[in-house]
Length: 203
Image 1 (cartoon, helix red, strand yellow):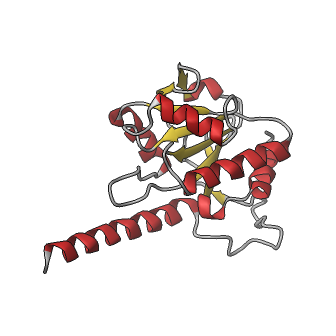
Image 2: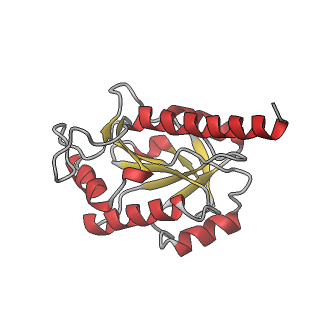
């Protein structure tokens, strides 16, 4: 087989695996939901496994130049999402959907954006992204070394950005006890559903 054809097949296979993995972790759709987008579970998003804990971490917030730890949000509902600051399509759209949900909620809840591209997410790119998406002052953009970020990616079932393939684009609501409760793939995320689930969890 020609090397270029072999490479193309490998890249295509990697992308398919990423999509299937995301669907398995975050739910492949709302097959059991009603017309309102809310399923019989009472939530619009996909229920996470009961034992799925939010992995603890200490990462650098490029927005405030401070260190952020997951444990400091205990007792509060938190949105955790995964992006990279030079993204031109999925990440800006996800940011807009989350911003719309917070606007509809009427008040902010902690929003943690975890980098999936530690090399590319420089302080300049991060701050530009937050300003452009009108999330400056409303979100923490967490970066670190690949070794620091890998346990977080693994804990949420996220494939990071890579050469020739896209990262798992997803958002998770973590409840006040530190449990991952509700997951949304970005392709399924709309502000109304996220707002509903935040309210249902007492945000």
